Amino acid sequence: MRPQPFTHAAVAAALAVGAALMAGGEPANAANSAANSAANSVAHPAASSTAPAAVATPPAPAASAHDQAVALPTVQSDMKRGTSFPYKRLNELLSKLRTEGEGLFVSRFVLTDAKDSDKPPPAGTKLALMSAEDYIPIPLDAKGAFDLPTFPAERAKDMDFGTNAAKGDLGVRLSIDLATSPEMLDMGTVRRVVVVGQRLRTELLPWYVRWMFPQIEGVIACSDQPQWTLDWTEDGQRWRLPLPADAQQREPETPKGKPSRACTVLTGQEQWPDAALFQPPPGANTKLYVKLRNARAS
Image 1: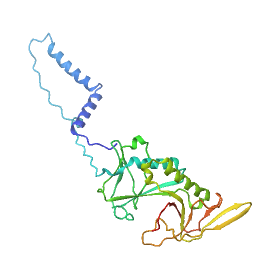
Image 2 (image 1 turned 45 degrees about the horizontal axis):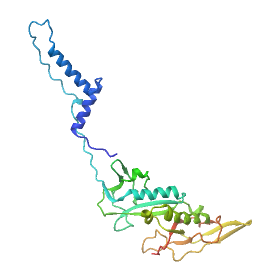
Image 3 (image 1 turned 90 degrees about the horizontal axis):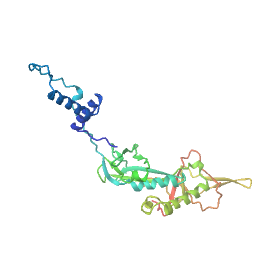
Image 4 (image 1 turned 60 degrees about the vertical axis):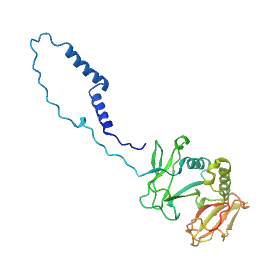
């Protein structure tokens, strides 16, 4: 819950209640007891008095620190809710991805300049998830990359993104990456990626979030050197199959106008067995990507 500024009256009331409780009773009871005592003294004066006694007015006690209201600083925030789309639908997508994705996929988010998706947000940009009950800061790295948590649907239904940037100044890039490392990729995993990805999009995700999840039709592997192979054993014999580079496939993260590294594509429709293990070239900085359906080379 976000901290709220206290007023002078609220602080004074809290201190008064605390003083009464420290005296050994509830605030209302303490006040009533003092009033009743004063009334009894007036209604029943001492019978042995022959002349009114001079009553000295006691000096006013010095005010203690507990008797003075302390002015607390007002909490101010430059974060604004509702500067992006509501979090409810994205929370639903991420929840399905993590519970039904069989551990195959990882979501990646990058905050960017609205006019240039390759440019990070301005220095000092802040991001948070906000609702009437929650304020959850989202850490950003130097390139604007960040992760998002998931919540029960009831808690996420009123959440918004909040930022200190002006509306329209920021963009968000979402990508779905593979959780499998290049050295652990085999043909069985390639086929699972395609089947589970299609099932998520067509069966498990509501229609209003399907646009955020790509249509997957294979796996792309890109390296500094195009020297990939598939290795497997069949009938006691070891097989090694060189994989060709796909001249039409650019590495998805290649900046516009820059040459792409060499890439090969596996769709799962190949005749090779599930146990056929992908072998990346040593030291070639190989990276895997999901291949999107109808993605155009750029």
